[in-house]
Image 1 (tube, rainbow, N blue to C red):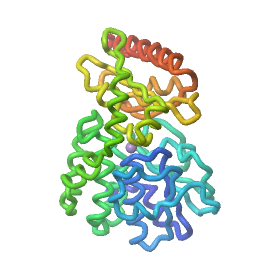
Image 2 (image 1 turned 180 degrees about the horizontal axis):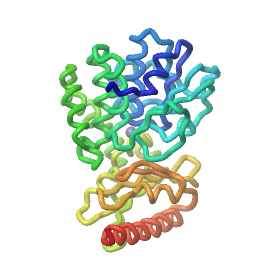
Image 3 (image 1 turned 180 degrees about the vertical axis):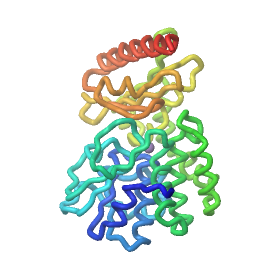
Length: 327
Ligand SMILES: [Mn+2]
């Protein structure tokens, strides 16, 4: 029996204008899945454009067609808008006008945009989901460039094959993409080994804020706005900083809180190590994500926000570890 992927059928059927979008503060998976699908749809003769609210971080500037990504909002009504790697259209963080919406993603829960949505929370990355679609549609059409975009999402969303979303399919997919001619070593080097000195100076300041709580089960880092201003770094340079806090032995949950330009809002990234589901912590503050990586936004002073987070994390550690013992 042949599997039918409704999202593929929906895209095949579309003859009008398609817009692909991803979440704001875009990452390798959002950009990679969008670019791969864009290139494939172009090859299929579709009328397709791409857009997002923020610009692509410079480490993704090597990806094919990245320069063709437009800035949201676009004052135009499309036939079909596809949101990739996001829990719903709202994550574009800008108005997107379309007759119909479609979501392709791997986040837990979220908003269903259409009966044709393709969401698999067990997929290691959205590019895994897109890869299944493209293979189902026309395997021959997946070229080295498309494979490079797909691999970028897989590599970044699995933390270089370290996170607990890594499964058999992730490695099978990596093997498949390698058979399409990608250069894994070059891709990794372009993404992870092009830090600006300013970014490392920012890291220096951020590491000095390291704090441990609750018998060293919780680790925190803080990025104050003036750290960013003084070093000349960008907010995007904080990507991955939280992993230094996570790397400490005995830490169950690590978080980094990044001060937004309004100085009152903090963007929080939470990381777990497999035992504690950090998505449940983010959800308490209206955020979301995955079991090992989640995020939210909280308003307040540095002290207030930190305290709220620590209390919530303590409660979750207590509840979740108790549940585990009872099983
Ligand atoms: Mn993702």
